[in-house]
Every structure is written in C-alpha cells, then in structure tokens.
Amino acid sequence: PPAPAMPEQAPFAMDRASKLSKDEARGAVDLVELCFTQAAAFLPPSCRPCPVRLSLRGASRSVSADVPLGQARALRVPDVGSGRPEGDCLNHAMINVGCFISCAAWCPQPVIADSGTRFHVLVLGVHSREQPLSRVGAPTHNDAALQLWRVHENIEACSLQLAIAQKAGNPRQLRWVDPSRTADRLGLLFAVTGDGSLNMHS
Image (tube, rainbow, N blue to C red; front, side):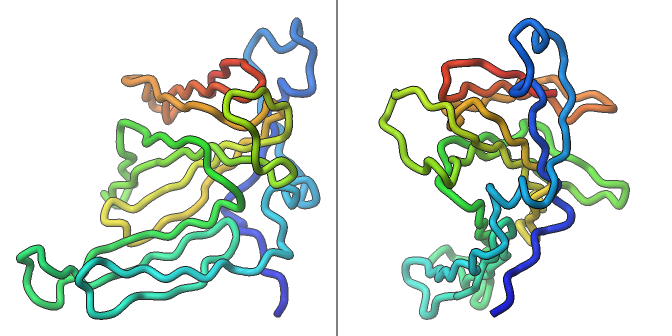
C-alpha cells in the first residue's frame, strides 16, 4: 500500500539551542521548523498503520482500528457493568506516536476554542527511533521529541499539533508550571532530558 502522508497540521520543529554553544543558548531560543526529510527521522512515512484492538472487561465485542503514524483514532466501546443505560459507549483514543513513550503530562488548564469547545493538551516524551531503548538512569544524547496532542474534552477527536525535536536524549520527566497561561502562551513546561539537563519551553 502507498505510504501514509505525514499529518499536515503537526509541524516538527528543532530546538535551536541544540545547535548553539552553551554561551549562545543561555537566553531564549526560537524553534526552527524541520524539512520533510528531517521530520521523517521521527515519523517515517514508510511505516504502516499500527493495528489495535480494544475491548473492555465484560464487553461482548471489541473494537479494532488501524492507527497511522503520527495520528490518532477515536474508538467507542460499549460500557458494560457500570449501571449506565444499555447501549451506552465509552470514548477512547488510540495514539500512534512512533516509538516508546518515556513520560507524559497533561496541561493543567483546558483550551477553549472560539466555538466554545473545550480541549485538553497532552505532551508526550517520545524516544528516538535510532535509540528506542536505554538503561534506566544511563545518560543518553540522541535525538528525541516532545509531542503536543490536542484531545477533545469528550475524547471524540485527538490530533498531533506540534512536535519539538531536541538533541538532549530521551525525555525523563515533564512538569507544567501552573498557573503560567497567558493570552499568547499555552504555558511553561519543564523537561528533564537524558543528558541530565533541565529545559524550559514556553
């Protein structure tokens, strides 16, 4: 089958600090958008969709779907044994990030669109496909990424909005600063990475 196209709504950007000296990188740095070839190192278009099957305990049937790389699929599974009306379903989202997830953090404040729809932002620390595994506590210096996903309040939809690539090793821990939301900023995010550094993203 033809290779799936990369999601157009999810640009990949490289933290410019990874290309600067320590003295040059002391201040705030901008993100430089990666070209298609560079971004393909994280989400290669040649990868086929990942088949998943979801079933809840007590459910009479399961739900299956193919999840393309860098995308998500919303699944509705019958809710059994919770006392809800028969035929009621629970919403789930299956996300294909492309490699192992080392840490995750929900933005503490939801985003409200102009239409009034509420979204939540989930940031995921994703290993590099070149170095998917590492010993616990061992330093790493490979490329890795932080992926920011927008999740509908009712989990009816989920999409990758931005991915930040960095040459700082696999992400180890993520923590949002609350409150840090402004009119021009989603928030402040601290990330501990595999090379032992602490990075702040605005």
